[in-house]
Length: 339
Image 1 (tube, rainbow, N blue to C red):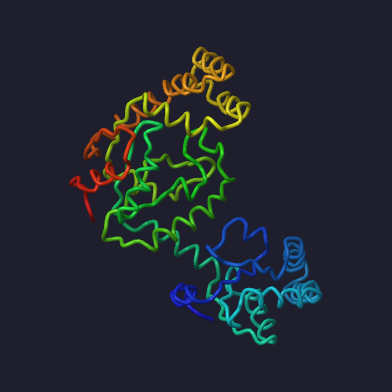
Image 2 (image 1 turned 45 degrees about the vertical axis):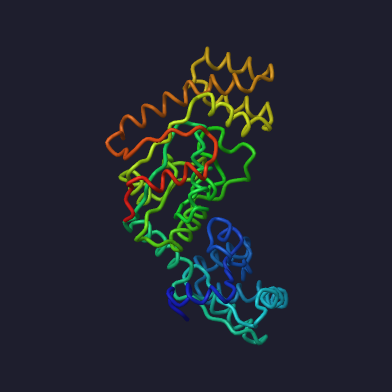
């Protein structure tokens, strides 16, 4: 058994195998881990039921009976991911599943080391990391300002960023899931966010796009959100004309029926008259007018939000929507905290 510190160091050179069931793995796992379940979803339930009803000894017998026919397959999968015949292993708590897995593959000549405390220890460490003070600077601006584009330009210019929307597979607004892959679970998103933070130098500033605590269906960790809620803000001022065109370019290829369905979900906030006008323009194929009407609501909501946080605004910069690298350099040159 090895500590989490050793595990994190060794995983840079050795593959990680998660032997939990597929359902556990899909809910949340360590980035880059391979899932070679010792027990599948149904088998795990069966063993758990026997443990509760008949005791540990009977549950162990059930486990061996179920795993036995698949031992050759399990070893074959382990051989495929361990080109050097060595790997790291974990289960939920670093108990019986990982120990048995290590013994099975050990008989096939594959060296392994199991994580003490398992995935639970990793998860606790990740959540503790979000409590650390992070030198975050938020980039804010009305919908369609191009915040994500500027964030990525800052990264290319050597700045540290956390791209929350990329990790979440969502652009934040009600329409943010359009043309995007399916979202991860909240647990997986948080694991991936931890991995991104873990790579950063926490003595240097970290640029983050201004977001609410929910991005689509996922939620930011409470401690991380608390840090964001206290962080300084740099505001982008972009004309409505530029923002409309950016949003037309972004959402123009979306399915019209799907776009209309999402509009229906915000009809109460948008107002019946605005909704009907936007729907009419959408059905006419006039996406620019549709977007302009939608921005009536989004701009109002944004301005209310930023008014409540105006004391944290360090600076406001106008952007024409062109040359994001030049604008990124302007941001870097601002007198914003580096630690």
